[in-house]
Length: 266
Ligand SMILES: [Zn+2]
Image (cartoon, rainbow, N blue to C red; front, side, top):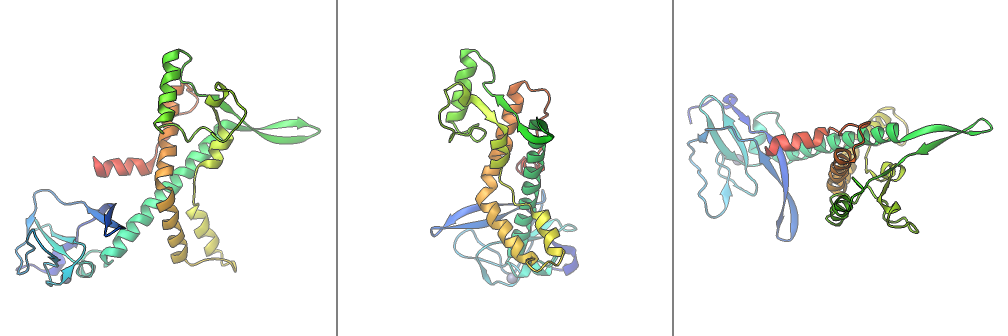
């Protein structure tokens, strides 16, 4: 192609999507393609039908990764192994894994911040006499208004699952009015976190039950798979409540995770 290999870099991965293939869920990378680049000339071009191959070495591949040449404004589709020769040397699979780990840590930190916010604003230490102290938790009436239209609106939101997580539906013996209360102690306990930073700190302290970074990351990824959507829902539902409750004491919760996600998708 008349180019030096150092002119080429791996095209960054900015997200991943889960696709169903042969009944199995598979993670597929999403790339940040540069604008107005063309396909690089190659001896092994992919055509639109049939198997795909690495356009560098011609090997048949399952997932395409990409390298780009910013001088020529070219893009080339390559396999998981060939991509390791460019950029940071991570294989395609490792790149997706590292990307997921970064996203999982971001969401974990967000959820810890959200819990902290709730803890600081919705609970306090109170003296209960005889020098004893106890943590007391607030509850908030979350009808978003007391007129019929508002009551109907919150009922609809709950029905659609848009704001059901904040309510402890397992609580029995309450009338329909008190079921519209958010018990912050419950919400605080229900928000999923992994606490990655703390795990790493503990493992670095050299205690006998410390785990390797790799096994912590494996647990983190399992946590992320299980809790990503729930975590996002908690953040969105909290903000929906904040927006509508007229509680000026608390601001909307700014999520780095969701900010990044919308940057990618926007
Ligand atoms: Zn190749």
